[in-house]
Length: 113
Image (cartoon, rainbow, N blue to C red; front, side, top):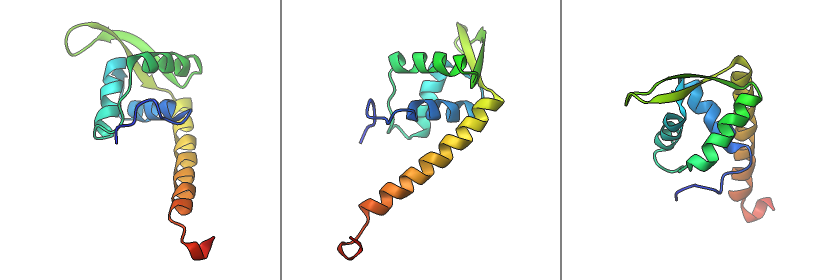
């Protein structure tokens, strides 16, 4: 099942922070990293990604600087800040608890209801 626009609110931000925790990257590289690490199960649109990058930068969770991409084009490279790393840790914990809770409900047996 390919996940596109069905992401829960806030999930895209968490995925971007995680992608940048693996190392700085330009916007399209972040998109490719998320799609790659999800093993192709998450597909992002650039129209969703770039506003999220701007929002995260405005909040001080990532920072950016201009550089040259691997195909020799001018690109904005993003990097996780300390505040972004703390937010990622918090959001990962919340997500893990949410997944556990939903899994508990979905695997409940009739005798547990």
